[in-house]
Length: 328
Image 1 (tube, rainbow, N blue to C red):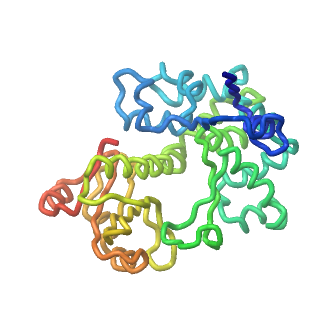
Image 2 (cartoon, rainbow, N blue to C red; image 1 turned 45 degrees about the vertical axis):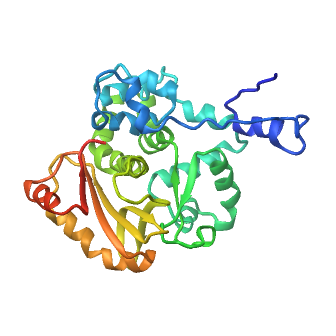
Image 3 (cartoon, rainbow, N blue to C red; image 1 turned 90 degrees about the vertical axis):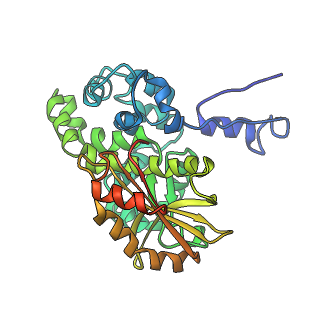
């Protein structure tokens, strides 16, 4: 038996999977290892709760080596300062090492990833930011998607995702997303030893402008777990999010197509309990979403890191169609 193992995606494909490979047609199996999901993240941290670990996951993602580097810290910012902002740490230039082994025009890819990290998610916005034509970005985006560094998402209601004009690009790897948002733009300061200044900039926006979006990803992941655990008397075949003119933005949309069931949800990464207004806002969007998804029954789920007001707890106690999740 011959087992080939490697982390260079392009090399493994060209030497083992491509038609021109000497090994083409001879493989009997292949395994593409994915990052560790958040549901298993706590296994690296003894005696820590998931809500407490969300900031760590927002930086390390599910890469075991990154997690191992952070698992003995209790303060996320101390971990960032010592292991990401420190020029002597291996994570300081990790994206350079990752990409230079996979692509030839590293500068072009860095500019593209940085544009997405700065909030340019539409193809047109990315092109404008880089001063390029949209058609010139296609090959670069395809490479990044093949490497699982970037992904394209569309509203869950889209029936032809590949042709959708509502597609948005996002960085799929948490560490890469963090590095390009908070480290790459401040490299000049770090090289001058101004680590304290860079860390202060990270602290200003880390929770609401970065970790909160990772929290939404984790909550959507949690929906599959809840469905498998029979939280509802039906099971989803689709979970995603919605954005558009007819219902604004909705963090979580779970659809049971076969039986016409719909679950709408919101995720609040916050320090204050969320109240009835969050539920009412979601309920106001339900009629439009029932039409868009062609479903007939709707329920609600709210996630909040700081819990809920007594008024919302009482309302959920009286209505089985409302579920509240504080601990993920």
